[in-house]
Length: 182
Image (tube, rainbow, N blue to C red):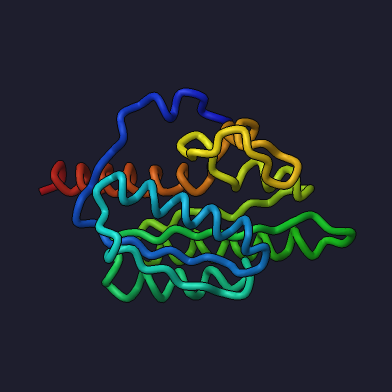
């Protein structure tokens, strides 16, 4: 997916009453937690009640699909957001973990009929991960350093916020399909 430079200029989609599950990997918690926190802020701004956001932690990215699947199948959530980080290593291990995560999430979404959104970063370096994971555009400490990436640099991507927006927009699209097919 290319970078959509106009995404934050569009009006925020809102869907009050939604219940959203969030599955967040604890491996690289500084970044995965930042993405989940950013997603929660965006969901609340989109009208989702804080009590209707259910966060579940898993050890790493490979465990995300099973928990996302159970959340989706529970009938208690309208959508599930998944956050993790898989860094390129010296072996092919990262590729296998990422592929398993992608395929598991996609299968769970299609089988349950519940949108499950992919916020698992697959980066070559920690610097790339920071630039994608750390929120900045709506943070009050603009210009502060986070590792070796400034918040201003990180503004180009905020995957937590982006995934939350995609979830709300997908739910609205599914609502539209339901209306059209009545």
